[in-house]
Length: 536
Ligand code: PEP
Ligand code: MG
Image (cartoon, rainbow, N blue to C red; front, side, top):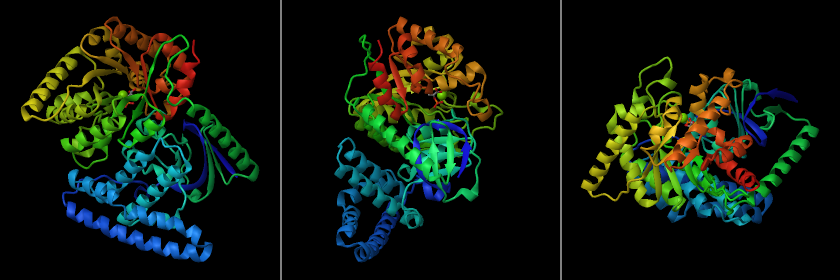
């Protein structure tokens, strides 16, 4: 048995085999493919291959374990031949001009999401079956024999993972992440947290560990290789205890988020991908407080079209069925790079050409995204929010562009709605002039991740600065209080969408400061609701 100590990105216990990261095995790349017929043919061929594999497995299982056990493959075959499923896949391929792998993967997630919330063993089993079958089709399309050598989900070990790699991961295959480098506050770490699985960073990458049995303890930041019998059983007990606690949190579903004194808090989810809506809803999110829309740009090889963006935002709005969905316009730049933007090389990209600065310099890209958001707003309760604001002039310019977008859409006679507009307060400049900014917008959302980085002059990506980077630093907290008071002075709500809002140790302080909304990692929603309901 060997033990390594790192830093926790997300809590929880995972027990399973270690697998080293290989892009092909874990990513379902999303690509534009104009030849839809060709993609549909690939899909049909992959289905045939999977049908053959399943038949062979069925025969083998029937011989070795009997007819009853082999019945599972009949259920798989039915899913494989399901007409609704095939229709959904071909629609994505044709309408969004996407590759077959991605169409199959996202169709699988769609059908699983339809089953979410129906709590029975049958439904859970069916979700797993759908995921298994779609995984097999994707593997056949990608020429990967995942299921041949890996029957179970694994603990993934990687030197580092970019935000792009994380958004492309097939979550059904992962028990936990173990990373070598990267801070616990980077975008990669935040996206890993959204998945709600244990994750560590700061663990030495070691190829010889491939295939070993391991335990990830996200509470203590520990990775244990080849655990002894005693350690394994104590970890299994810890995991069972965790499951019992989660069952208590699950009782918070459907309850109001309100203190004993009657203060109501909107408890929303942060998401980075359309598929995360499923996780948000299964954790009973009251809305989406931060939809990091750059996932669409990160996962692509070229600018996503207006139609693609519209389809993604509309899907989220419709799934949330009238609950608020705050879409943040693209925050590309810094660690979130997409080659086709051709951004200049800068020494300090976090303080360079990124986010709203790119949008205002390249208004055509910005207008395209805004049109997609305005159009999606006709299908739900959508609001738009702008990142990295530093001045009133920027907000005025944004409002001019929004007016142009509205005029365009009304001229084109497309259904749309002008969404509520808010800004992120994530620079010290914005916090300091929040009294002026408050008069211009419908709401504030405080991005404490960047606010802490710029207030404390500490790079949030730097692993060696993790001890100094504190979003609960007194200076940051004073700015947060100032923003809440300035927002309330003109009657606009103020939320927190940075990681500070997910920190249970700060919930009471933030509620007492007067915050109206907390937008957090989905798996934090129910524990926070419980804590808020117990507050005076
Ligand atoms: C923030 O800066 O707090 C924030 C929510 O935005 P991001 O983490 O995506 O930079
Ligand atoms: Mg930010």
